[in-house]
Image (cartoon, rainbow, N blue to C red; front, side):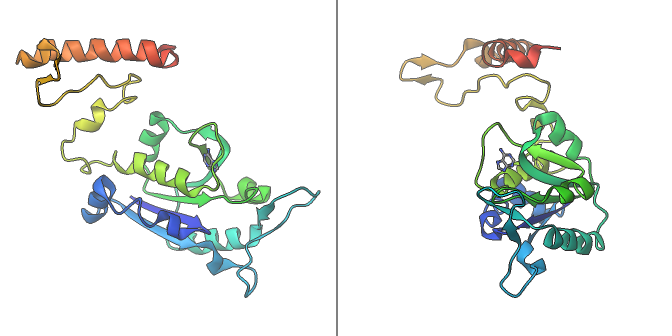
Length: 225
Ligand code: ADE
């Protein structure tokens, strides 16, 4: 899978993809991430990519020309299955959306800044608008990093144990069960006996039970049809 990201702050995206699972995905050739500086397509030699908004009001708006030129230039190299705009008024990211996006070949992610991007770019180029939660970030970069992380770990062959993503929270609309490691007795708090029983069926049933209980307590909305 190939992911292109358009941003005015490429520095913010230097570290998130260089560690752990995403690093491995890139090294295995399963994921390619390219971060593009929008100022390459600035409207003048001062690197301008934003301007005042029509109708007045505080805050700048990202201009349509640099974005359109960038999207068109990048589209010559790859056909994008989705052009995604990270924005707090987009569709809320969830595991289902990540699963669907992990099946795509090429995606382009646009990181907004200031007051956002000119509406005409949203109308003419963007195919999916994504929010990572009901709060406002300073820009779309951290949201893009979250989105890429959730997608990258789902690509076949990325996780060592292929089944492990299947048991993540949300993968079956349930939160993950509690987990324990050594020691079996930590300051008097014991690991549940059943996990030491060596009986895989009993352990699986217990985990499912715990998942259900946790979901009921913490996220009853996930259990609604
Ligand atoms: N940009 C600013 N806030 C955001 C959010 N919550 N989700 C996605 N992009 C954003």
